[in-house]
Length: 318
Length: 255
Image (cartoon, rainbow over all chains, first blue to last red; front, side, top):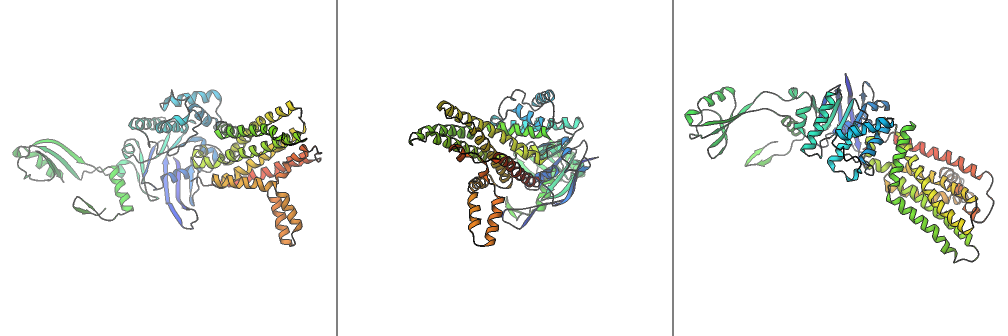
């Protein structure tokens, strides 16, 4: 079942004093399934935050419809089942961490005992157990991100929408947010998050959507999006005396160590079988696989071709 | 609904009382009320009038400044700082957000007015000049603050904080000079001009309805039904302004 459905969404805006329309989203259709972790990736200004704001009714589409849990998303009561962390959240800095979470819990009509328990549990869960009595103005960026995440979970939501949850976090913080997302999935919750950090997306997401210039260029599982074929291998060899290898191309040389690129499995076997004759020792064989980053860069460049640039004496067309 | 409005109102009140500007304005107000005693020394025989007039005027001006400077930030700062995103992504109707913010500021103004009034009355009690009718005058001033706050909320839904402050303060000034528009309508030779003046006269907030300083200071009788009319005016005009603010905010794009 789809938890969130965006159907043929068009969204434009006009800058002040301008009659010209700028399109942010053009015919976006996207479906988030129950219980999955969906990573929403895209270039800056691609329309990720706009999509999220549309999904939550903070802005309205020019055309198309948004459905939450199978119903029209304009129904305010549906948001009882949703948690949201905005990008770079600016929170009420005059409140302490505990007051901030208690305020958000009140909005769901929770009684005092439940609020107290939930605030305490969430502060522990996001690693702020002993900082709840400090005003948010004294929090670091990472701590603000965590308390923001805690408020998104205050109602134990079925759908958690996170806009750039890893932004501004150090590696430990990122790891903790990643663990919280995985924990949410383990509890049967759905997580929809936008990010620039592709390695995390590849690691934890069930499905990924790639947005470029307001259009969804690709959507699917990592395996569906990224080919698992190996187009070439990189073989690192040490002690190569004779440079004339039977196959492959030397791409770099450092003292007696060379890196050879081999384009087929047959050539790889041939190269490995003649190593002794060349007095070489095998250091490593690395299959080159396409990554999400390759896909991201390829689609982004295809959408906005840049002029030729000069790089290391060669002219490349990007 | 009331739980959510109440939660937002209490949070707004908490925000306001942690705002330095509130205390700055309060200190100034108390200082000005006290200053009236020194000022009264400069006049002969009208000490009581000066103290009462200056005291009420201080409560009036500083109450309005509080409503404007803290009230303007109610909605526009929330949008500017994007704190509103986390709120409106929760099961909150937009009108609940606007009403919660308004109620929070009304509560702040109530406390503010009580503090200023307490100091004012204390001075009058010490000097033996206390008049029970002053309570009515302060009550009407508080009604005026409620109306100004509604206007501040409306303008902050529509525009930037600076523009909203200017517009609210301008309406405060216009609202006290509205009698001149009525006079102008009577004196204008053209019918179109008369109609235009009349329309503006009824459309703009008539803050003169809440001003009984003259009657109090000069010991004149307050016209019967004046307080009732001020109350009805506040309810009708204030509700219309708040309804408009809610309607504007309902379709506002939170960029």
